[in-house]
Image (cartoon, rainbow, N blue to C red; front, side, top):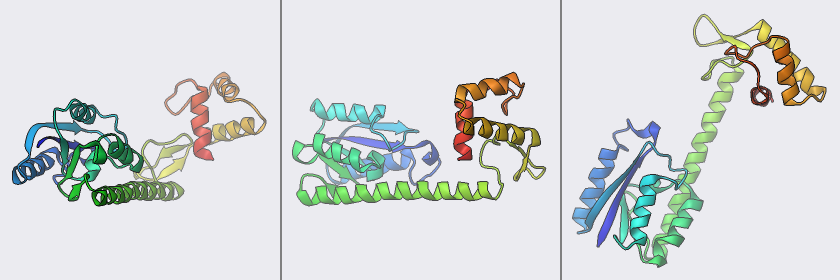
Length: 225
């Protein structure tokens, strides 16, 4: 059978040797050799998230399947293809299983031609999505904890300056007064554009010293909510 090898790494994963494009490529090539699959092309998506199917490399591989240039796709691990249950279901419905194309996952031992194989695929997709969402929740909780403790999280936000230790935030009196004014005007029913205009008239600058826009005010209020 002719197959396409597909590998992917997100920006954060590129330094991980276990997930690197080279490591995935080696697994795909070894798998094809072991099971006598003809690897017609190996397509890579570097620095691409698995949250969407809109990836140049993946779309090219799927086009090759539609055109009959290969009968299946080989991946090192399922999450290299997608991390979404919805997207996974779409791929099964449009390309694999009953559509006649094969999906081979080296690390997950997946065969989508059988009902059992498709069941395993759906279970693994659900687990993959759960892992991604759980990591997101833990990250958000950790950031909120740091913010509550007055620690810096990325860019120093309006109303604060970076302390002498380079880690903790200290209140900026002038910016805190501007924050109180923003909240007061919003509570009085003023629009975001009107608040931005009032700040500009008073000569109050943003953290970067630029004029206020309604989007800047909106962001400030969202963070304060």
